[in-house]
Image 1: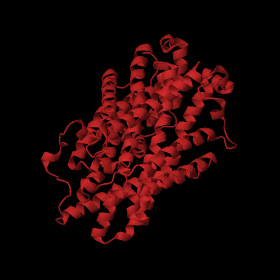
Image 2: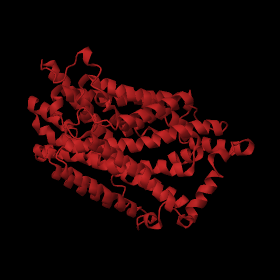
Image 3: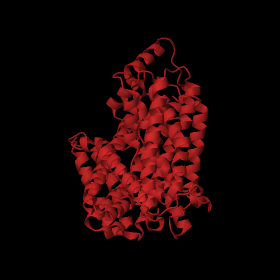
Length: 492
C-alpha cells in the first residue's frame, strides 16, 4: 500500500491514535530541559576553526543557516515526531514511500562513514598538541589515530557496554561549555590588554568578502553543525503545552547554540591568523597561543583531555545508534542480507559495524596519502553534509505530503505555516548541496575538477548507488517475521 492509499484516521481509529499520542506525553518534561538537551546534542567546538577563518563574518555565516535550516528542521520534525512514531523512516515511508524511507535511514547511517574520520582527525590533532604539535599536520599520524580509535570504539560497542553513557552525558560540560567559556574569557582579556585582533573586527567585515561562490561555501558545513534537531523532536509530546512550549524551547536552544558556535570562533580568530589556522587543530592552536601568552601552558593537557573525552563519548554514542536503526528497518522489510542482520552474543549488530569499519579504514588511509590534512578534513566534512542533506530533503517533502494526505491524523504539535517552513528548508538544503560542489576559498590551490569528482563521487556512491543496490537485491525471505509482525501491530 502506497502512502497515498493510507486513510486518515477517524472515529474509533482516531480515538486510539489520540490515546497513543497522549501516552507518549508521560513523563512530563519542562521546555527548559528540552532546550538544554537540544543544545547538548547540537552544539560543539569542533566546527569553530572552520568558521574562524572568516573572522567577524562568522556571525553571518552561523545566523543565516540557523534561520533558513535550523528553525524549519526543528519545527517540522516536531510535528512529525508528535504524530508518527518510528523516526525518519516512518515519516518518509508514510509521506512518500517505503523505498525512500529506507534511503533516508541509509543516508543517516552512511553520513557517519565520513563523519567518524573527520571527528577522529580533530581528536588526533587535539592529542598532538599534548604530545608533539607538529604531528597535527602529519597525515600518517592522523590516519593511525583514526584507525586505532575507531576499531577500539567498535570493540567497545560490540560488547554492549553502557560504560560510556556517563562520558557522553558529560560531554557538553567538559568538552564544550568549560573549554568554550575559557576560550572566550581568555580572548576578551587578551583584547582588553590592548593586543590587536588577528582578524579585523570592524563593521565593514560583518559580511564575508565576495569573491564568487567560493567565499560562501563554508556555510555548507554549518548545515551539518546544526543537524540532529529532528532527534530531539521525539520529546515534543512530553511537554505540558507543546504548542507554546516547544517553540519557546527551540528559540532558547537556537540562542544557546549560536552563542556556543559564534563566540569561540571569534576568540580563535582574534589570536590565530586565518592563513595559519588548521581546520582540525584550530581549537588547540588558539588555546596554545592564549596559554603561551598568559604563561599557563600547563593547562594545555587538561583542555585537550576534555575535548578528546567529549569527542570520543560522542563517537561511541553515534556508533551504535544509526546502525541500529538501519538494522531494525532491514529486519522488518528485508533490505539487508541476513549476514548483515546478525547480532553477536551481546545483541549488537557487529557485522554492520565491522563492514563500516573497513570503509572507514580505507578513508583514514587517505589522510596518509594526501599531504594537506585540512583539505582532507574539509572534503570529508562536505561529503558528510551532502549525504545528510538527502535526509532533510526527504523529510520536508514527507511533511508536506502528510499534512495533505492525513490532515486529521492526531498530532501533539502543529508547526505554524508548515508549507512555508518546508519550502524554505527545501530550498536551503538544495542550495547547500549545490554550493557544496564549489571548493572553499580556504581550500587551497588543488584541482577544482578533482574536488568536484571526489565530492560528487562520494555523494553518488553513498546516496544513490549503494542504497539502490540494496533495494534491488532485497528479498522477502530476508525479512525477520517477528520484527515485521511487531511493525504491523504497531501501525494497525
